[in-house]
Image (cartoon, rainbow, N blue to C red; front, side, top):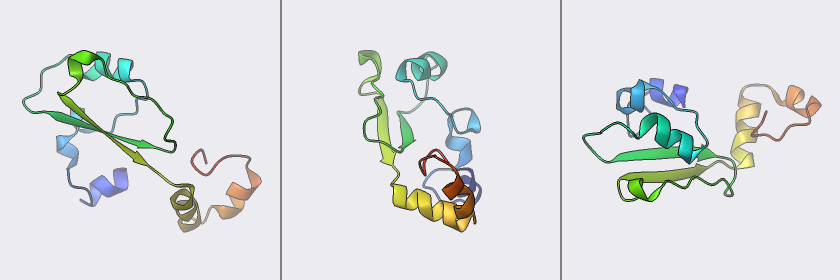
Amino acid sequence: MDILLENDLLIFSKNELIDDEIIYCRSARDFEKRYLRQEYDEKISVIRILDSKNENFKLSKAYIGKIDVINVITAPEIEMLIIHSEDMYKEYCKSNLKPSDF
């Protein structure tokens, strides 16, 4: 994400992010407590990058309709391409990790 933001390859820029940074937060409840208790001028979108369709991110009723949640699921094939592009395949083979965890 940092590389995409730095090279203006996304439809939004870094200064449009909350606190101008990528947020690493898996829990909807924690996200609400840390970020949604402040007022925003516009409707905000939460773009989540996941490696599983099974991850749950359920916002409370107070935020439904005010927040768009967009889930982007990465595929193991894409993760393997990244491992190859970073010349890390031999190290990956030595590990017992899934491509997404590596």
